[in-house]
Structures are given as C-alpha cells and as structure tokens.
Length: 388
Image (cartoon, rainbow, N blue to C red; front, side, top):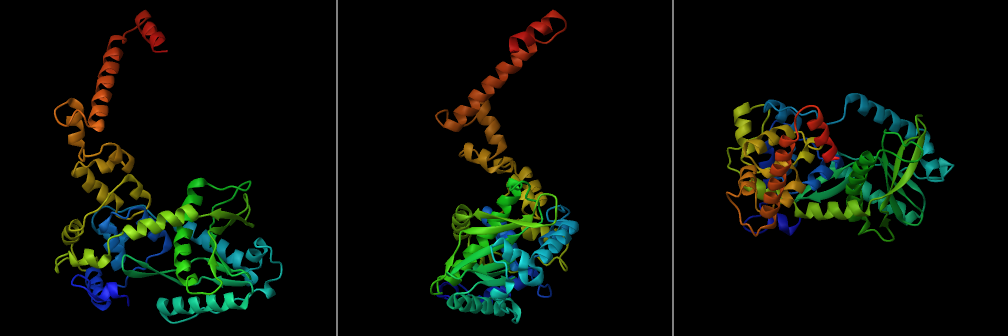
C-alpha cells in the first residue's frame, strides 16, 4: 500500500476506499472489472470524472444506461465475440504452434508454457510477475497464455489480461494481440488497427512495471498483431509500433483525477446501485458527477447517449466535438457563439469572435447571392454559369 493512499487528510486508507466504492456500486453487486479496451477509452477522455468513478466502482454502465432510458448500442455483438474466440482458439491450438510459427519458431517443444493458475486476479498477477522473471532469467522462449497484469489507475489497481505475451531469449517481452478482423494484402482497417494499438499500449504500460524490477527485461514497443489472412481463417501477423500510443496513454492516465478524490466529493446518500435505485435516483446520482461528453464517446462509452442528451440540454459547445471546442476558446455555449457571430456579445479582438463574425458575413453574402440568382430559364443558367 503506497503512502499516497493511506496518509494525509484527504487520502483515506485503501480499505476505506474499497468500502466506499462498494457502497456506490451496491454492496450486493459484483463489480465489473476494467479491461484494456475500457481503460484505453478512459485514457482518451481523462477529464470525464463520471466515467472514472463508475469504472472505478465497477458499475455496470450498460445496465445503468438502460435504466436511465438511454440504452447504447456500444459494444461487440455476440457473433463478433464468438468469432474472435474461435479464431484465438485456433491460433493457440497445439501449444500455440501457429502463433509461434509467426515468430519463426517451428517446434513448440522448445518454448516454455508457464502455469499461471492462482486464486483471484491479485494472485494471478503475482504469479504472472514471478513467471516472467523466471522466464527472463532462464534465457529461453516462453509463451504466456492470458497472463494477468496489474496497473494502478487513478489510485486504484486494475487487472488486465492480454491475449498472450512472448518472452524472447534476449529478455524482450512482446505483447500479442489476436483480432478477428481480416488483414487483406498485408494491411487491415486503419481504425481497427488503431483501436488494437491503443489497447495493446495499456498492456505495454502494465508490463513495464514488472520489467522495471526484473534484471535483463525489456518490454518491446512493437506488438504482434495477429489477424486472419485475406478471406481465410489462416493467421497472419504484423508488427505494430505503439510508442506513440504508449506515450499518449501514459500521459492521459497520469491526468486522471484520483478515484478517492471523486468519491470523497460525493454525498453519502449517492448510489449507483442499478438493482435497488429507481431511475430518478440514478439520474440524480449520475448528475452529481461532472462529465466531459464529446461525439467520440458514442463509440467508446455505454453512457454516451445519456451524456449527449444532457450536453445538448446544457447548450455546451463540447457536444459538437473537441476540435470545435478548442477553436472557440472562451465561448463555451452555443448561445454565446451565435451571439458573438451576430455582434451582440464578445470581444472583437478575440480571434474566435472575429472569425465567427467574418464567417457570418460570408454566409449572409452567399445567401444573398443565391437569392438573386434563383429563377427559371436564362436567369437560372446565368446564375449557374457565374457560380462555376
């Protein structure tokens, strides 16, 4: 237990934090563990305290969104999950023969397969860390099937389970990501590869914690992405450089407000217990925690529809996107933006205000021109010719 968690006037002991998170989630509710996909999404929006506390407490956001009347279609379909599981099983069959062949190893018997069984995620993480150190010291190839890694996020431990980790004889550790989307002619969908890279970056960060206390160990920043080749079910692989994703994720996770700070700011009566609380009580509890909605949340968070509705009701510019929000500077509401464009508010020397007024003038001029060029016959043709 680190001193930052159990000392100081605003740092409750970890046991107290766990108790408070259990109260928020509902004492009878089993917590939903954070995975790398959710953690990558959380790191992409570190200013959202709402997601941080809900994920930290292990609240089922899918069930919460449904009870709030804003169910989200976010998430993989059961068909996609089944297809992915079947492909991963094929890749790892026969001692990982096909996976090891992608690494240039033709004989699986030369590769160690450490036993990682232990009680609970904390026990499995400890067993994985020990096995990684032993494999590195042995100087042999080793394949870790679904190891358990630990990473501290906003003051709370998170346990992560990559598809596989390979230990090289020279002490390098490589993360293996197995995905069921195809790699056609050596390349795959850029958006899907990017999502896989962000997810793998979280595993790399977790591995670096263990590598830091392991002699001779080094975590590779090129992960092995394994996908079906072309339109077949045969696996193929590509090395993906995740240095940029690792740097961004590390920086974003460091910006996350500590979970105990968010929990301490909530009144004792606040609860996210989906099973016991009414929709009205849940809506009130959720509104107690600030959110940072952006359109990107629609593909990354189960509460996106609910937060979008609230953002629109509040007339905030952020609902239009982070890039728009950044361009508008101190204009934080759509009403203020429109008023500035009309010349009713805002400092004329503000670059954002000046740009809005010039844009409005250009729009007015364009509409006026369109109005004078409407008509039939020769007039219409002349107007079109002028536009060209």
